[in-house]
Length: 165
Image (cartoon, rainbow, N blue to C red):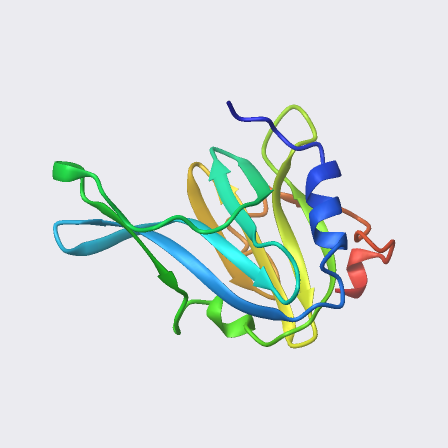
């Protein structure tokens, strides 16, 4: 069962990791006929904290404390390969950075539900959102084609204005 987040869960999980270094990132990719077809789930490993799983469903971002699962076979439908994020993955580029702040991104919905987050690291900003069961991952801000469907909150989880991002 999918339980949408009104912002309480995401804010709590991210607030607990403020000031903490991103130690590693694990990604799960769907592979079919020997080729990667899409990023399905990823996990952020912050030093000294439980791992945070980022999964999406439609326009919803779902965050939870959960360890990465092993790779798995889906028969004729391909496989899920789980392993460390590596360059050129944008996620891998933030390993070793300290989380300074974050802002919630509201998804395209009639209810104010969390569709993504804008993470502010000491080395730059990372926007992550779920859009139609696909990931939108960008450095510094959401790409222009995503902004009609996503709205970054006016204030960060620490209370700063997002214009300062």
